[in-house]
Length: 187
Image (cartoon, rainbow, N blue to C red):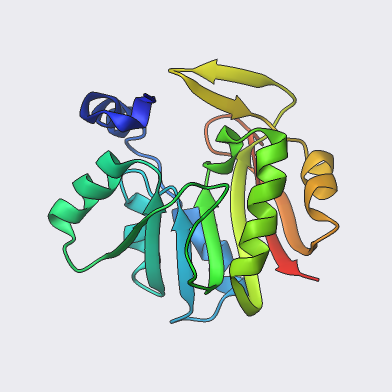
């Protein structure tokens, strides 16, 4: 049982994440994705980014935590939500964009490759991926969760066979240049 599989764990995470959301990342996404496009968010957590994305896009939220999905549904009944694992993503639906904010770093590098392969299959023609990661060269475990930090060269190696990189840059979330975002398009 992971941190996000219990109400207590989810509430702890919500407190810890207070004050953080993807506002700046979503501004960058707007440069690459037209309004009203379909977006799948992987790992909605408390739903902060989902709320921002919904202002411009037709968004489907997903998480592997039933607790996060149920909690979000309490105040957003009309929302399209899927219970999905970030690796296998078992759905027959397709999207113009697949988005995540600091979610895919919880996957092993092997599972990240599998996730990208599956995401490629789920994109509509001319679709894009938009993901953010912690920058660095270490692996940590906190609260039963895996955190893999990436350098740009690592992300290029993992994605280059299936995707063209439209944009890949460092940005600051907590400390200067502690994060990377990447915008990918199918080759």
